[in-house]
Image 1: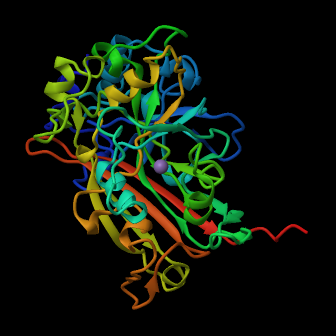
Image 2: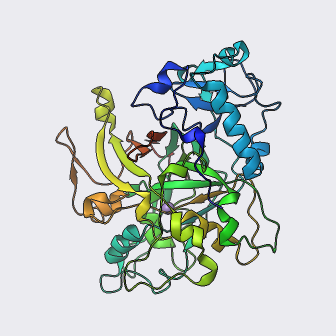
Length: 427
Ligand code: MN
């Protein structure tokens, strides 16, 4: 079942933590996302929940007796609901805070945020049909969408070791770039470095090998959602991707946001799953009544770019594009069910990327590949500079919010990552 609405979603609920009641906060009491933090001098990660501009340490508050996030990921949906209610009641304005809870609060600006959980394994899907169409048009103008796209959620096996938490930094990758037809490839720093605007689904309860997860219970195996930037070297990708898919073009770095917004927190922002007229209905194993009624999650997404020159000038950056997770072709439940249909086991802390989430309009591209038509049409930034692919010193910031009339808006915080110069060429 998909998580249901309850009194933790009441839009009238406020917190005794004043910053949680600010209209612009990403973290009102209706959100309560999980992450891991360290105070200065701490060696071990603690489990925390974001509330306004603060973090509540759950063990220090007496709401947990451990700091093992994997144990939280493994909780049953019923146990997760119980914990959410407990946290919500401890932070609600009508319950004067116990001194222990009060003392367990610390400013987010005073702590280090880690990866929200150890990332066990990583799969990246390709559910953004508008991304698949516009990228397909660049490579295959007459046949942009491959015939399997509307039947099978396409994905590839990514690499968990290079997943980093925001604010992330990585060096521009070196690699092979193909030249003209009968010329040898060159080797050097990628000249077509790009971002991909994605969400990441964090797996909660595992399944055993050989035990597919049916659609009816697929979301019970998801803990929540983070922002994800799948950095991509387009020149390396174009040369290497056939026949086995992305490899070194993608696995040098992937940045995720530090707070996992839970499936429970997303309950008010669901809507029916439909297919455009004329498109095939999903095969029965990818269909369920729950998915048809509420399979889609409405999450509004934004990409911002701050160049090195902007940072030096004290400029926060330009908005590059907006899109919505509601435009994805496959739902979260369909990704879980498809991933396990062959008996593949998912584990707690596995990360399933959605793929680049572009909107239907050209200005809604979720990558520079789309926004610059493959690098042929430069963007003009607010400082007048021309920009195509990422430059050293650039910072890309992803943001997301869920808004609906009659509901308290919740957000995801930021996923921020910066490009450093490449390593010196070997040899
Ligand atoms: Mn991707």
